[in-house]
Length: 407
Ligand code: NDP
Image (cartoon, rainbow, N blue to C red; front, side, top):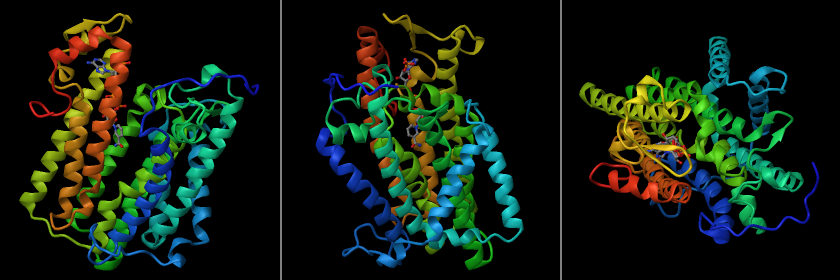
């Protein structure tokens, strides 16, 4: 590949607050991760506590951590197919191999609960890794051909482009860096952290609590679903539209495993008792959310892959100038983002086992609501650009975005 020095920077509408956002977010979000982890294990676990319970600098580093992290990522890479020449869809298989190895390790007495003690230094090191990876991605993008660049991350402003990602699908040989990071190290890391919190609870109290089992079970289902349906990630905005820069690298590697596991982390220090009835209601909520999430995502994926398939052929659609059609009945006729609705119901079910005395376990629901509203607006803008009048017709036919009759 040749360095393209004469590329004209594109004028595109900037997202995430433009240069200011792209400068502040890489500082603010890593600090948020460390702050949340520190608050989570403080006795009060209060987000409004002042001064916040800051960790001592000695708690931020452990020489074991870089080995654990590099070992984790390297294992994920090799498990893909051993050769790095192809990119087979085998995330679920890789997950099963990891699960067997982990089970074996636990059976042999591996002290997984010790990860509870290592969580802060692990987060610090992962944040560092995300910065290094983003820097590498930014620099190497100058050797990429212009057709390989993302539309949004090629403005010529280094801070903004570093944040958004210049190259769309950077690869080393046939090893797709973004595709790998999207699902594997972060999602599987999240499950391992959750399990480690459960083991820590067993160490402290002799057995896992019902609340901890629910949180672990729900989130395990979510991760297994994502890996089982790995192919679907190929049509998401992250892969199709966004460049691979700090936003996705940090999100995939650091934000997901460390903030999505906050509920399990919280339960170690703040045990909660849960009635049978309460647990049943929460399981039902998660079930309904999962059903909506899975059915709507599968319906759209099936429709995009093969619109003549019997499961989608009977659905009402509208034509667009691009030749693609839009579903206006079925799940996508209920609201414009039924998959987000299901996701939000599940997110609520993940927090409820932690009781209602603290706000911290609800961090995920709050953050996720903001993320999905913002994501919906971004997708809407892109779809209006792609489909023009047909999109406006769809919006008139299906007026609500995420929650029927509310939003
Ligand atoms: P979606 O799967 O919602 O895809 C949006 C795209 O679907 C649009 O750009 C359009 O693309 C197509 N589309 C929209 N409306 C219609 C229609 N009526 N008929 C046919 N196609 C339509 O995007 P996301 O990537 O945002 O979400 C995927 C899943 O991932 C969701 O379930 C979401 O909740 C989840 N998610 C989870 C996150 C987490 O951190 N847990 C973070 C982000 C997402 P086109 O027409 O070009 O096919």
